[in-house]
Length: 116
Ligand SMILES: [Zn+2]
Image (cartoon, rainbow, N blue to C red):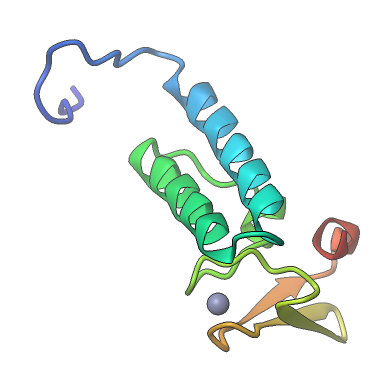
């Protein structure tokens, strides 16, 4: 038996919340991308929210999205606020906002998703 989360009531603890969470995450990243050039703070708020939705629903953020933001400051990593350097089979991405770096394995060849 699973333990319920919080108190009951009108909560819709439906069976397909995973799908809804995933949809939400996609939508939030879309919004974050739209806001990024205009309002960096709001863009970060969307990413933060997407991460919250992800952890609350135990829904993993898809890998291509996961690679597109800074884990430390929640900024979307765009060419203007990040630096990418390919090192062998790895892509090193530095967030110019907080200085965090991440390494992305390029073995699978999904670099186009990152540099888009
Ligand atoms: Zn950062």
